[in-house]
Length: 117
Image (cartoon, rainbow, N blue to C red; front, top):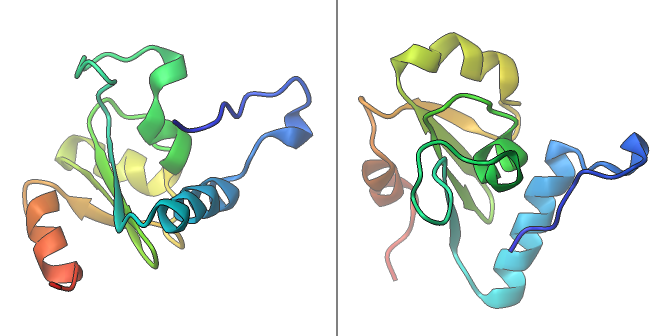
């Protein structure tokens, strides 16, 4: 479970850089290779409560459709063409590669970017 980032003092709110670093730290601690972040909540509801917006928390993307994958050394966010402008405005591309999900699925991306053991 990811920690809450809304603090009384805005100076205490984590940046995207700090959030990605925190997730990567947890990946390492638990021996996990990837963290998958759907837009859906834990019950796979499409419309999520603000406290369950995991995708927005980790990427900054506020659109209603998306999926992210965070690896030890890279991260990618997927969405469809409806959000092509919005995602480029909201997501820091120094942390996330942006992919159109209709042209490159998360599964295809993983096959190309994760080494087989």
